[in-house]
Image 1 (spheres, rainbow, N blue to C red):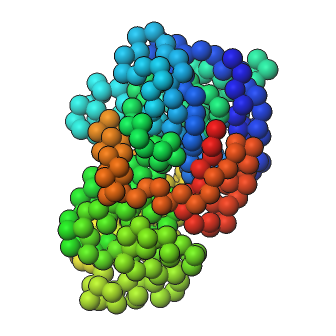
Image 2 (image 1 turned 180 degrees about the horizontal axis):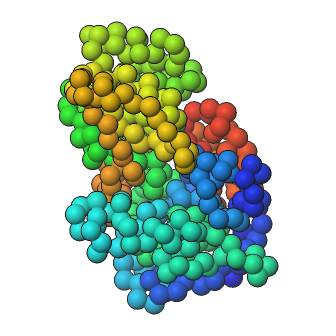
Length: 366
């Protein structure tokens, strides 16, 4: 079949909207009619080359859609069901899955990062030439063939765009608070970056009952949405950021700082923001090959801790449903993150708006 999709042929070039050939799903695979896709920095990292990937590739990893067809042996979804897509499919059998860390599943990592599905092959082609999947999803497309393991059924009552955001930003940000850090009521939190992941982190901290939630960003206009989602304070990032954070926390620093952008210098700044005995959570992904300078002397003498948080230390089968119902119960205002909607043909405009600091999360409607 044919599907219209965004395609990246070379780094530092725009995404091209074109028709591709999409083979039908094989065993344990599902054809999804995409309905909503979030505009996320991780797809932009493909375009800049910060994430190295085989090309040409169809991006898109934060998506929601409907089951259009199922391959042989598929048992977890039926035709017509609404699903949010998990970009880190897990096998359920490897060491990490069996030890409660399915987001670190190692069974299919090599295939996925080579741009294939879980059997090591692709369903995408352009005029007979091989094309690659991103995160086994490639959901910036009218249709996508994905692994059965990537499909999480969500309630029909949630808007499709909310289902899309649960697929990445929400699970990464809220999960970093609830799963990785395990923030408690009364804790103080600083969140560096007010993009999709940062705003979700703020929502998670508010839900956890943090008493002070400080949002830090370089764009003044993000203050209103950060506060609407639960931030108690907003700081425009600059030379006096650390001093201002300490002035809000009895000159100690916060209990938890979250770096939600993926910039080494910002990670180093966030380290300064935590109090002795505090914890730094790194949920933003820095460019491949980059390094961050964190002082070992300070880590030891002040007993600070640093934790990585990949996909919010999530169990997507559990967390997607949890976050969907928290939204329906009014406890996670995910829809308030959404700033603007675009057609697939406007995908390059959508990413330009994101890079230029537009508040909230953009949505591609399909």
